[in-house]
Image (cartoon, rainbow, N blue to C red):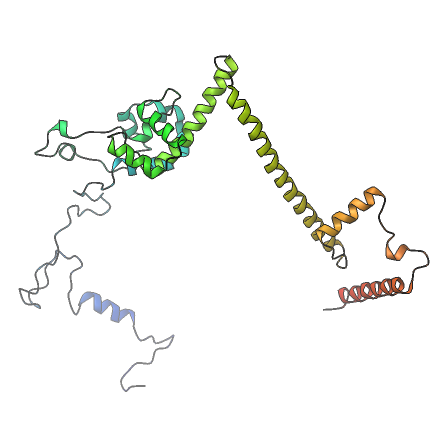
Length: 310
């Protein structure tokens, strides 16, 4: 250990409370905490002691910081975020979220987390009010069966298997509602459910009926569905016998049969064609006797190991 250095122990730490108090009362460097504060002119040269940053606009602790920067996200991105939380909005108050006017929605608690804009921001100097087009956010637009021009275009393009990107570019080119790509897919899913419910209502009231081509396609759809259901049933049957294999293994460690073997044995027993178990056979041959003897030996050995002190 170097000469003059204090040995650090539990009773005699290297840094004491008195040393810390001395450092706080008489700081060595006298560096300010904030960037807008100058350095001590008695210690540092005037040029070096100048502030290195501007004073904060809102110095009060805990007060919301003001900013002149606008939200860089456009309406489509903002609508995208609300569209992702559509289920939450519907759970809060579906009728309110769908039917309320724009001013009410923008001032409610659900949408209040968006940064507020001042009057100067909404109408900047040098731009007339007619030049600023305030579009209705897409999340405030209710999905109804009586579609407007934009929804009808979106519906037909999706039925024609256009991608969300292609529809987005088409809407921008034609000056339509500025749907983002994610919003297009989500809105189309809601439109499908709305149109199905609307068509079901028309069928029940007798205002519409099936077409001949629809009935032909219905037969094909039923055949395809039956095929998929059969595949699912086969997979479920296989899964069942795999479970049987695991369960019998837990009941009897020596019954290490596969799911297929368990299924075949069960079917044979149901048909009455199952073979007699080895240990139940009358006048067994030498090979069968050897198998039975080996099985009993293994069972006795396992029983001994299970009950052995550990």
